[in-house]
Length: 286
Image 1 (spheres, one colour):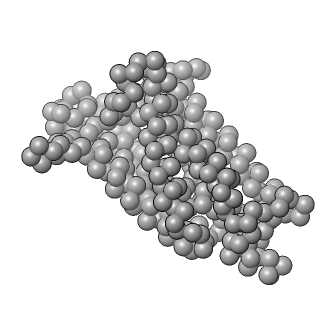
Image 2 (spheres, rainbow, N blue to C red; image 1 turned 120 degrees about the horizontal axis):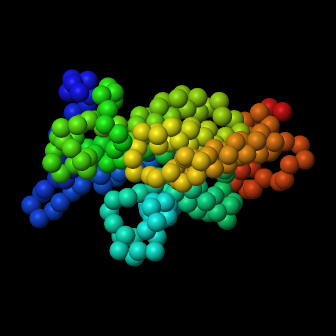
Image 3 (tube, rainbow, N blue to C red; image 1 turned 120 degrees about the vertical axis):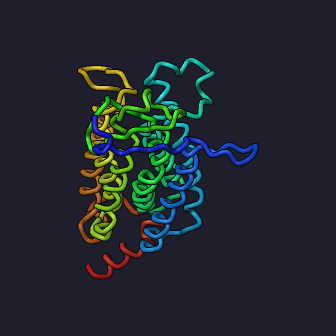
């Protein structure tokens, strides 16, 4: 296997600052939250959304994202009944975070009668945050797959990396998710103003992520087959794709193409949705 044909990383997975030990995994997740939050805030300002509400949504995203990702990982690996595994700093299934975050934020938005465009704002920020947050996994050698000489395969030469052999390059699930999140953001961000119906941008992000995560799982070794030759994360991705499709159909039936104006005969809007500047402009132009 030619070393020139793969990516080589020799970075220590941790940074020692005197008595303090920092992990690249945590550093890049924090950076991902910040960078994703910037994109979310930019989208929210463009839509005239209340930026103060984003702090609550951000807290829900962080807490529910971590809890959901950890719980699903424990379920997928049969460790949910072992309390010792609950507080482990490694071992997360991002699909679980996506599901719990979506549910928690959806409940909050419904309770507070906020515009559904908050969901779109969080979704577009999630894509960028994913691209940045998974960089630490690449440095650590986490979520590796079979050995490979593919040009995107990664050889982690540091002895503390998670990969089993520093002399061998492996498919890197972490790198593939960096590329997946970056690609989703690069595709949808320039088109964000064309998503006139609320939540359609959300469903687009979820669908693209689900497809990418489904394919990526074929190149990882950290999830055993669950049924029909597919792993737990792949079945979760299938479920997410189904939910995204149904959600897009609902949005199409609920809203017209005139920038979020409800279809004739649809249920009344919440006060927040009624005050959405895009809805107001659509109403005035109709």
